[in-house]
Amino acid sequence: MSSRIVILGAGELGGAVAQAVATRDCVSQIVLIDTVESVASGKALDLKQSSAIDHFHTQITGTDDVSIVTGAQVCVIADRAGPPKNEWADKEGLAMLRQVLQYGSGAPVIFAGTGQTEMLLRSTRDLGAARERLIGSAPEALVSAIRAIVAVEAECSPDEVSLSVLGVPAGGLVVVWSEATIGGHAVEHMLSQAQLNRLETRVAKLWPPGPYTLGAAAARIVQSVVESGRHRASVLTVLTDEFGIKDRVGILQALLGQGGIMQVQVPSLNTRERVKLESAFEK
Image (cartoon, rainbow, N blue to C red):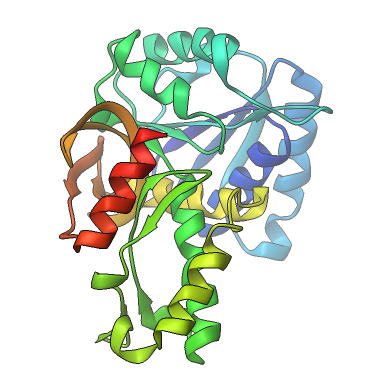
């Protein structure tokens, strides 16, 4: 194993991503980059000292030099050291991302935060980055949380639950119950309509996920990309006529590998799900 990833931002989210990636032992080096170099270096040292407890061998360093992105296998966009909590976003985020794309030599860029949708879209529209290279990882954290509450309702393990989510975060989420399964059996046959309605109400309250859940989700995406394992995950991506929608960011299930998104999956929807999805993108 010889791979290096960089994390832009040494805030709470950046630290959570670094820890989650390190404990997976899927890369040889993690570099935390932050404008406050002392915070990046200090957090890197703290994480490095935990390696004996968490049993990982990944090297972790900190710097304020964005050019270190050159040669990285993956770039993760997180949050700057605070307070206040401050995800990379908007004009400042786009300016930073322009540097990352110039130095990154085609490396996939993972947006780990919950407020980076516009930056992801403008990366393609304004900076000319290929959509396959840009991956929003927060939906994977959401799907994990939904699987957990479905498992509680069904009195089973979350590992037995398989489902996908579409739409847009914060008010436009559509769980594809018509294709969801528990232990290989259709959810709609395993749970009553009252239970499904109760789950729908709870799903709306699961966004945004917390930093540690977001960090774990980003780490899973990182591992899928660096190991080229062709894993599937729920991601934010720029739509290119999926569901007849273009130039918007939405959640899809994607096949991931070296280079980023290899293929997106468009599930079949029943009439109710399609109407909900259309309404979500009209907001």
